Image 1 (cartoon, rainbow, N blue to C red):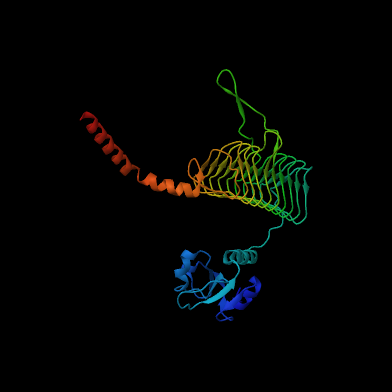
Image 2: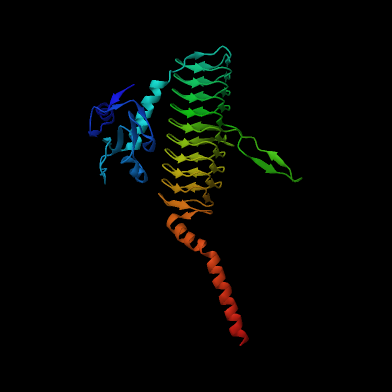
Length: 346
């Protein structure tokens, strides 16, 4: 498909700075731009590329002020990154045909309820008393357990497993290999130093507009529910323990782990490989840097934390300065120690 810069600006409620008839037929990174491509500039560190890019047009913020001459057409919008996401969604819809129908190798038990306009792929299995909402897509090898309820317009990519009695809201996306509702890690030590398994009789609830990354595991509760609130986005390879609650619109990057019964607030941003201990509370709006370890509850909203164990980001940066100087400081301490000993001997 081909669009003009003015058509894109109208779609995004933006304005054109340059030739409104510029032809656009693809999307490219600003550093790899070429004729006919639309790029975007959201991060200031990429600004140098806007003066050399081969892209025919670039999305920029309304207040962007170039420091040099620009040869490309600018499309000014409120938020270039959000505008790009909107365009990519439209592009993806134009490139993919929605699948419909039930593959002959899929197994659907008699007690299951299947909505309209549903796709169920090869070798998928839907258990008794499961409910699949209208417009859902279950790709090959998906497993849906007993009494699972899946809302409308959900996409379960290949190999997703949803254990018994879990509840999935509307417009959720679960990527390949995600496991929802496996047993929580509950074992009681007994006298012979072995462990007795504690039955996990709860479930998992994913509210609306949740996205779960590939091979991410969300464990079922011991009792009650593990709850992933509306709008949460979890990256690949996360572990969410039993009875955890993650607040709405929180995002977590790859390889994070949240131990059992911790409560993460809403609108939090958590970097990759962060570890959160069990039975903690993380306040709303908390931001946690990658590879940090949270050993205690975070009570102040909108905190920014780094380190292991994590603490306030500005203090962390100050401490890092001294940490880098530790070898030098160690030598000085040794020299002072020798000086003190020599003064004592005199």
